[in-house]
Picture (cartoon, rainbow, N blue to C red):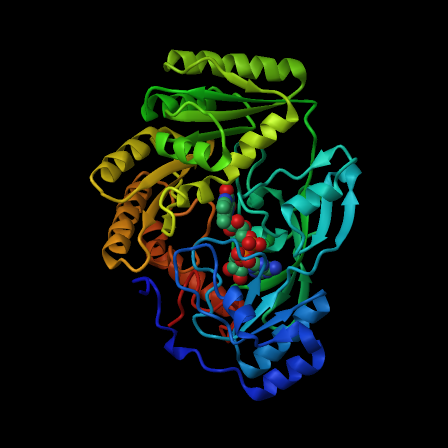
Length: 471
Ligand SMILES: Cc1cc2nc3c(=O)[nH]c(=O)nc-3n(C[C@H](O)[C@H](O)[C@H](O)COP(=O)(O)OP(=O)(O)OC[C@H]3O[C@@H](n4cnc5c(N)ncnc54)[C@H](O)[C@@H]3O)c2cc1C
């Protein structure tokens, strides 16, 4: 069964033998057409059936990336940058064939400028690898999508995670990028100065461009001092609305919480089962507070008061690092926990983000919609940002399940856009959200995005058919 939003892969054609010969000569075993490797590079964590590229090249340097992009431009063959393959919206499917350019072996940590609070890494370094490299410096990198994604992929999807409510997303935390352009040039988008008004902001054009405008080979990111004190707490509520109201009041009061994650009852049950926890099975908020010991205590007291006013339980604290790690690992594994609710099922994950004042209404209307459906579902969210995910479980091969899940997502997105929100807070567009961009941005803005794509990639070789279609 194919997804209704899937364009026909009919225009994919095998790569020319001339290109294959050139790539084999330059890359040896790092160029492969092995079916299993190609298939693995034509899938992501979405519910789409994989569509394999014709070949995969493993790059080890910016020069390697440059060589592949130049050859692909010469032969007019698509190039799809590949990080760790953890994206969720069909980003990596080779809908027009071509070369998957895997940068995951570009692992150098090039510079840690502790005094400036920045680090520069090659694109294949993952968020956990960067934090391992920062061990002993007193600094950390906060952006934490559930998967241990690459910094190149996270930049390319404008990723965020549980810490974004305090530290921002990749949009706020990428300082500069080195990018190989479709024209076969290597550019640096900015210097390391904290501020700059020097011309168009190329960094922010490439952040979130999903491999469609250039291939990122190096990333400079902001770092933060490790907080002196960290406390995590769990708080249960009688119903979803009370939990969400507590979050809204916390944000509106300007309390600088580091993390606040919402799990509905189905999600708590799934997480308990998957991660062998014993959390109380009702809607819950998972908080984390960072700062000096006194500011952590003050923040926690203020939030506990707001929770009590909304009928929340007394905080259950996780102060030991190993207890906190257990809790947050369980949260990060919520997706896989959800899949275990129905072994063998696939998931469609929604990703709306709304202004915080609209969050309670958004979740409550979504819950009404979910109650009328027979699909198993759960809600989990970075609610401090107004961003939440509904995970809808579908039977593989069931067109009816797929249609119903997409209809729920469509209604959810339309409501979010009407509330001045977005179809995707953090996962990106890929193939799955393309149909919503006109509703969100309007036809003229979407035309301008197409013009941008044409200007950066006139031959349409960089991850073609994603974000905007030029057909
Ligand atoms: C369990 C789970 C939980 C998740 N939780 C979150 C979350 O909380 N927040 C969140 O934001 N995301 C989340 N994600 C989604 C995913 O982890 C992010 O989208 C991540 O940023 C993708 O990085 P990657 O290295 O895996 O990129 P890939 O999946 O390999 O690629 C993603 C896109 O970026 C492009 N790309 C990759 N590398 C480069 C490069 N060097 N240059 C140019 N383009 C490139 C690709 O072409 C593709 O379009 C989650 C995924 C899973 C499976």
